[in-house]
Amino acid sequence: MIKCSYFCYYTIHAYYEKAVIAMNILVLGGSYFLGYRFVKLALSEGHKVTVFNRGTRPLNMEGVTETRGDRSVPEDLSKIAGEYDATVDFCAYVKGDIRRVKDALGDRTGRYVFISTVDVYGRGTGELLDESAEFETRDFGGEAGAYILGKVSLEKEIESIENRCVLRPSIIYGPGNYAPRENIYFKWISAAGQILEPAPSDGFFQMVSVSDVAKAALKACGEFSFAGRAFNVTPSFTYTYEDLTRIFREVTGKDFEVIKVTPEEAFMQQVPFPYPIMKAESEKYDGSALEKTGFEYTDINEGLKEAWENYVRS
Image 1 (cartoon, one colour):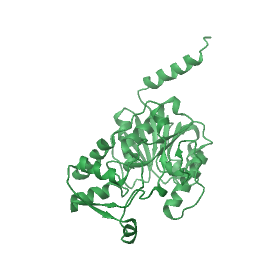
Image 2 (tube, one colour):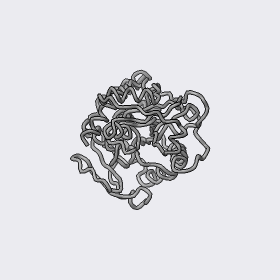
Image 3 (cartoon, one colour):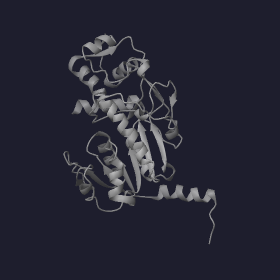
Image 4 (spheres, helix red, strand yellow):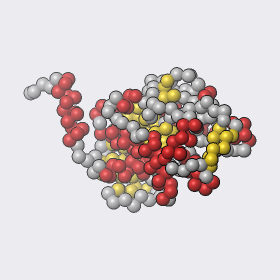
């Protein structure tokens, strides 16, 4: 028997990763925004995709097998047939969502890739938050509070799965975004020739292209070095509202008017500013671990230009 050294072992795995032509991937969710972008990317790279969701928005894509069901119903999960190299979970939000999938499919899931969020980290520490930061334990109430604690509970739930990878994106932007973020500005610019900007404002935030999160998810499916790890998916750059104004001018080519609004006026008039306005509500996340794997992020001007052009066409 030939003995393989440590170097040889990892060389073989590196070769295997490059040599694999196609994976069989199960997608939970996948009808909207990030999930939709991932499915298209996976197909374009020759992978086989099965999508499980409630079927309210069928993909009808060649090469995609669609299975309808509700993940909260064990009998529906039992409809999922076959074995998979990886499962990418875009729609796990509440405690038990991952456990039910594993109970139904067992090891047939292959590598379990969970799309979490940087919001799981404890807020207000003033520190640069990397993947080792403590999770949030407080309930801030409302939908946002429930969302954060739901993701935290699922992060703990997935720890029992050895063959896992957790991705924690920052604020995702890009074509097809259904969250009221960059599209608010696109609407203001195209419909009124102006935007609102909070002032004074010392808040900052981080943004990541939907295409980058999709690429990270695909890498997490197949790369050996991603097993058992978590990654923040975010460029390390932070932006302010003034930065966004400059970027929107560049990507749209429009000379729109900027109307300053105080935080108090924004609150009273229910202006939907989508990002942190003040420093006290801002956090900074370290995205370097993913970059050390060779991952490269999309330039924000390039990413937002794609989003703008998609908005104009739609």
